[in-house]
Image 1 (cartoon, helix red, strand yellow):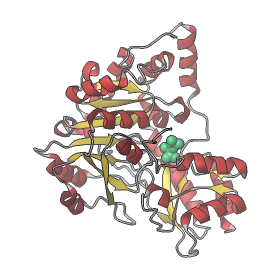
Image 2 (cartoon, rainbow, N blue to C red):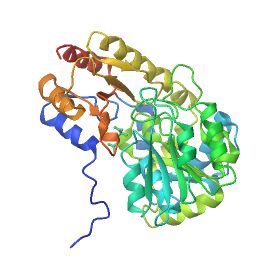
Image 3 (tube, protein in one colour):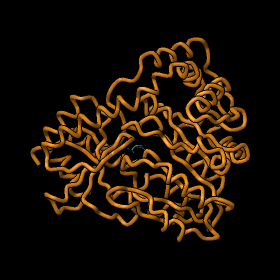
Image 4 (cartoon, rainbow, N blue to C red):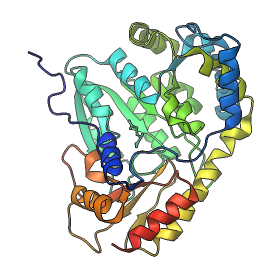
Length: 379
Ligand code: GLN
């Protein structure tokens, strides 16, 4: 007999929608992953690393050379000197980094501030650690953070706050004022920050990414999680990294060592070398922005109304002007009748709040986006 630690958590919506897309042979704009080819040069580096014999365990905390290169990148992009030996750990993906960060700090009955719509792993991560998510809804439809409400919901039990910019599922991004508010909230308090920055380079419209890494006083209290999969268009590689203060990273590694131990070595050798190619990550924002713009233009011919997206793989579209259906029903109908799969926004709310909005992933080839939009005109 198993007493589930997550009795109320069903199968993740991404798996559910991807399976539905497969079943009905629909274009999958649901789960967030590119359908175009990644860099073949990076694949060649992995291949060559394997042939060179880099096939045994890497260092538990990640290949030292890769961590060194990441520290150089952080210095260059965010003007912050971090110590690769004590502050960076390579992880099997961003989601794992976030889970490990929560597990490192949470105790029973701790409270964690979570903004909704929320990426679907956060709340189960908190619950499995015996802690309690304190839900705050982002303002609709700007998806800005209501800081006054955050201040009201801070209690003696607040252990952490999780932020995510660029934001999944909405594409909203935080600005300097948000950082200022966050500083005021955590100042002189024992509140940790988990910052999900997996879409670091997927930011549009010349907006600078407000990384926690820019702010040493915030990094003192933070775990900042990144994803190579998002940066190099290879989500299936499941490799990322976490950056934290030495004190926090020590505990993170305590958890990590008996869970993952170390990530695959050959990919780390390849990534260490590929990081010298700055253009590969600096040009990504513009490349993906063009896809957002291309899809948005095509969608003007449909009845869907775009809600602005400034980053990530995603854009939300409202259908309230033409249908009263609940968003899950519409997402299923679109898959079956139009052959296009999306993710209903209600799946990112515990209450299943239905604002009549669907999330579309536009990180796809132009031909895929064109075909999807043509199918959606029919609805
Ligand atoms: N991050 C991706 C998304 O939001 C999916 C990740 C996953 O399937 N676990 O669609």
